[in-house]
Image (cartoon, rainbow, N blue to C red):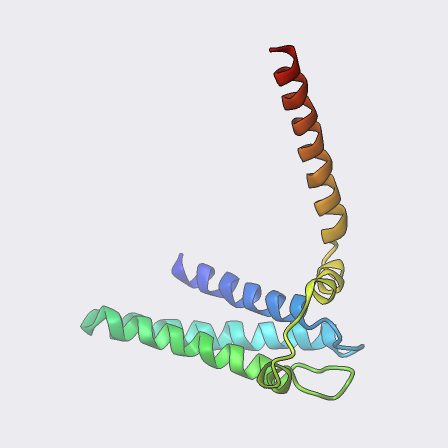
Length: 139
């Protein structure tokens, strides 16, 4: 069960990077698939060693897992293709973090429109506010 959760966490890490830095060009989708496959295999091997180390020390097993995910994040940031030929790692070092518009573009790749979701949330909030005001006026 923990292996499945680790692979899902690896997929989530990939999706976060791709949502935050979506300017990957044509190679981005291929990179996502191949990278996720390679890291899933790596996590399978690391999971076995972490289980063996867990028998001796639970903290050491946790450290191995955290190191593997740290290495994954560093490798993604260093190798993920970008249209401007500047790696994500260099962008992070230069403090060029993604803004809301960039994250919205990245989420559109996965079929999520943050602007539409926010507008729907605001509309629901407005409706509740109107009902509350009417109720207060009646009292």
